[in-house]
Length: 351
Image (cartoon, rainbow, N blue to C red; front, side, top):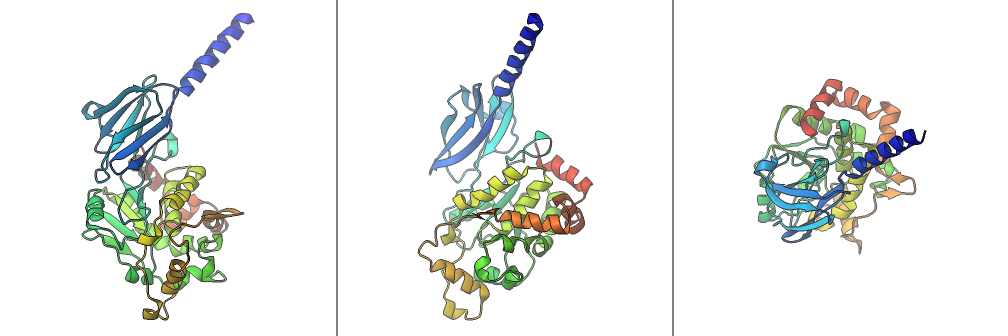
């Protein structure tokens, strides 16, 4: 009995050691104009490599550090150059690929990569293929150069007719799609435009944004170039679309909500919409809404994306559950993304 207990204890210890030697919480965040801080957790040291695209071969990559156990390393990285990093556990050779999530634009807002999240089968969403963003009416020439370097092959604009006229994107030379609707449609079933950040407004999204989602999934399924989709703030309509895209890739709800909340960190409202003169647009619903925001003393500070009931995003989930039964059924019946398409998406966008 003692022998068997010893064997069980040793096996448990080996399993625990193997489980401990896993890279978790790896990320790259800008810590200066020319610096990135790479951070991670792992019981074992990691080798860090740098390359210029997702999934680069280690034999061709630059070795940044060998057997690093500090959990944090600062690397020189100019913002205009988007690089990718591979962290390799020295004990079990597990590899995690990471990149800077936010694209650091001088006059952009919330332009970020949705790569890195854990999807179906424990694989991770590939970096550099799916981007989400706020409006892009004030990008600088340097910002435009940086966006061009991403190789974007499609922009899908989720904004209303009024928003697109008031603040057209400065990104040109890229295929652009939008589906028109008046701003008032966002408030059709709510008590007032003041509800525009509440869960009630999110209940509009599964129906309102279904045509845009069809465009996005058509690109994801049939084209190999990166895509970016945006609304004005890059948080509400864009947050809903991202939730559906990540759900299709098998990303769990907690990670989807964590990505959703990042908008509060990454938004820069002063670059999402030019300053507007209400006298020049006396009957424009969108102008009234944005002017009211711009007149607030704290208008440059993003507002929370939750109330006492939880994240506003759950309003969209509640509508999907009530009308379609599940996200998978919504994808199949409303968007036209069926089980075979999910297999294709996960093969292409997970690594």
